[in-house]
Length: 312
Ligand SMILES: *[C@@H]1O[C@H](CO)[C@@H](O)[C@H](O)[C@H]1NC(C)=O
Ligand SMILES: *[C@@H]1O[C@H](CO)[C@@H](O)[C@H](O)[C@H]1NC(C)=O
Ligand SMILES: *[C@@H]1O[C@H](CO)[C@@H](O)[C@H](O)[C@H]1NC(C)=O
Image (cartoon, rainbow, N blue to C red; front, side, top):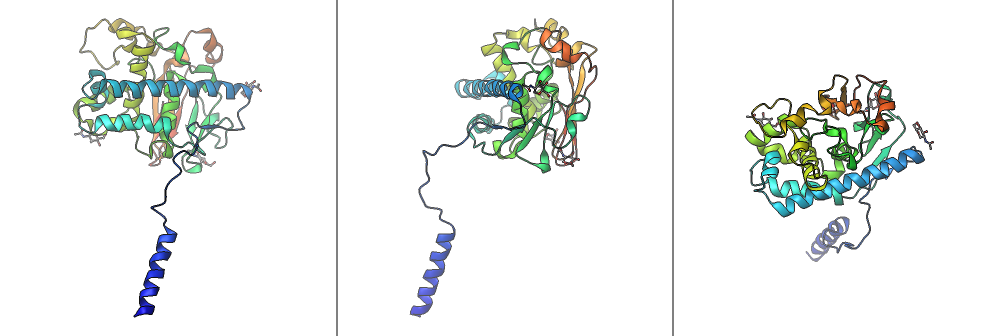
């Protein structure tokens, strides 16, 4: 009996040693909240990406602070995320995760390891099963994405222009695809701005985890709170005809209305290709014009795990 008891104790001890749950963690440890910019990025690409990620964290911080300070009853919050009980803490947590989760081994690279950048108009893609922590930024991104200062310029509206017009919103989208950033919480439950609003109004369960709703909300609060764009910079979705606010003219003046708008697609990990008119390509700004003239129609798509392709 004694021997058996000792063996049992040893077995328990062994289990305890194998799984030391109740050991104090190193709470002051340094960890990496920034992504890694891969060595394949040259000096220009690195400088541009560093600026783009600074923009990304600025926009995400504004979004998180807006939610924290204005609460779940705020009309802009409810416009994108609905009225369900879980929405407030979920959305707050998504921004907190994006900002503070451990980005060790989350890599953005500038080479073309999967050969996707050769496809017309691809501006980048999540590497999916080939490397779940990695994202490729293709050369085309450097010529037609805008920094935060460009918000509300040249007819840009949150509702009428592509979500990925600015580096910050585009990189938020790309970070959501990296599993470790939000523990795979955020996904694609709507197709575009209008359907994200539709989801929030009528079927909001997934709105707080919807990539497009989160991107659009971040763009909206940045446009109003930081860029000072007001109603004119929010605009109206193309599909919406039920309002007669002062924002309507801005919508018709949006870059999306131009005929040279590029179709931008990306393929999700599940294989889905998701495409969206990327009229940023039609901008008339000097910075982008030179690089844009060659691509009247381009694609920026990624394939989801289920095989669907998603273009932005
Ligand atoms: C970096 O790469 C881009 C795209 O290939 C190229 O246009 C640019 O000249 C390069 N910059 C430097 C500093 O090598
Ligand atoms: C993964 O690599 C294969 C082979 O190189 C390529 O065909 C496929 O498109 C890549 N997947 C992604 C998501 O890029
Ligand atoms: C609600 O949204 C979810 C996620 O997009 C979708 O699967 C479901 O079919 C929707 N339900 C209704 C009633 O529209």
